[in-house]
Length: 540
Ligand code: ADP
Image 1 (cartoon, helix red, strand yellow):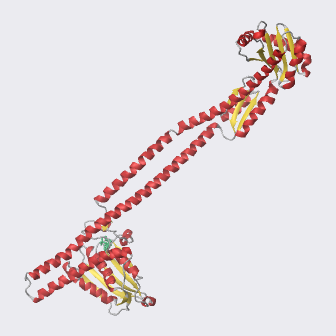
Image 2 (cartoon, protein in one colour; image 1 turned 135 degrees about the vertical axis):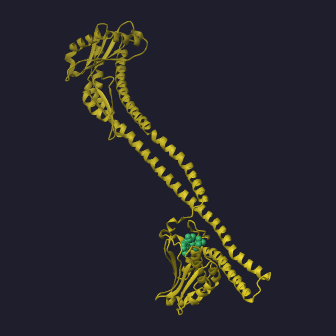
Image 3 (cartoon, rainbow, N blue to C red; image 1 turned 90 degrees about the horizontal axis):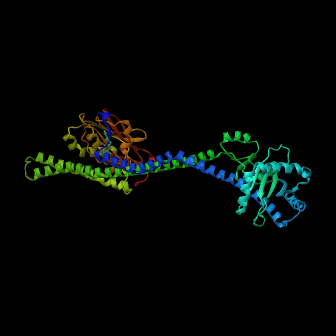
């Protein structure tokens, strides 16, 4: 029987649980769906992010290329200005002198030339002065090789669109120039003649003086831009780090590569993704915790409300029994059905004791609310526990007889007095006795003991009923806490033991339980016998 004990679990409680679970689901489902959606889009986001990082890096490489191109164009404009400044009939020697300004000013330029029909003018860096003829031959050959592009250059210039035509030479490494930029110098006034100009450039010096200083400015932004003539070395590093490389437009033999310092764009993207995953996870944890706390609070509140409602129902039910008995015996007497004096006397006695029991019940409820509100006053006097308990027991005799209980009294005759409130002490005792009756089932044998040891005066109520499983020993003293014994018809409001505990605390004592399921229970009230507690009259 004992193993069947369980906490009270009515249909209403199930209903409450359902509603709360539904509420939790309503909050959690959208959150979890959103989280799921976010998680499923993590890869997609990461790729997008990586692509956008790569696009930014590509834009930087584009700007380097653009910058180089602009530089060459500006030199071309300079060349154009020189030729336009000179009169149409200027001598080639004179023009050569003017052209010398270009290599002097811009270190990557090894030489500049202007070709009008078959007349060539050269402005070269001082160290190259001797190689003019060789230069002219190479340039002339290159112009013939690229005749079609040169033709296009000239016709575009006629339409007012000037651009440079790069021609790469397979020059030896140590040579001072390896690249030629050809410009059409024809303008509306000189369209009649084919007039070409060009700049001979050393790629190495161009990279050192123009490209390197520019790309090094990106270092501040945590970006490394590398320019290398041997593309294979860059691409080898490159592949492992999945960075971005492109050819330099004006120096096709050079490769431009960019990499973020420390992290690649992929690593950056996955770091960002991890960050947002972390935030999502933390948010979820916070929401789950909040929902858990909310649900627990709601659960407690609904259970308390339910317990209060049960409490009222139980109290009303409990009051009915003594009221019914009082009414029945009062009516019997009123109608003159009891003739013998002895019977009448017995019935008066029953009415008086049931009224007393009723008072005890009402007091229980009233005291409970007073104790809860902290407003209960105790009138402390020297008490002889044996007398208080014997009197209280007497008021229950009829009730006990009616239910065929056998009460074994082991009440010591002589006891030292304890400080206490007689009414409260008998109330605590009667609550224990009430429970012993309610939870006894077949074995209706109750033992009431009052004795003392060196430190305590002790009242014990022992029954041989259902007993209480150990896990409930602490809980039963909580207000409204009840164990619903399967198969039992135990009615109660769940406040009896809470009141006992309150009363014992007010007496600086304690209440203890020893119980085993199926064997019965012993509840002990321990009152301290300390001298100092006997000193003042109103403790509470
Ligand atoms: P109730 O009005 O339910 O009796 P109490 O506060 O007096 O409220 O007791 C709380 C619970 O402790 C009871 O529901 C009952 O399950 C258990 N209990 C108390 N006394 C006994 C006892 N003598 N034997 C078995 N169970 C008991």
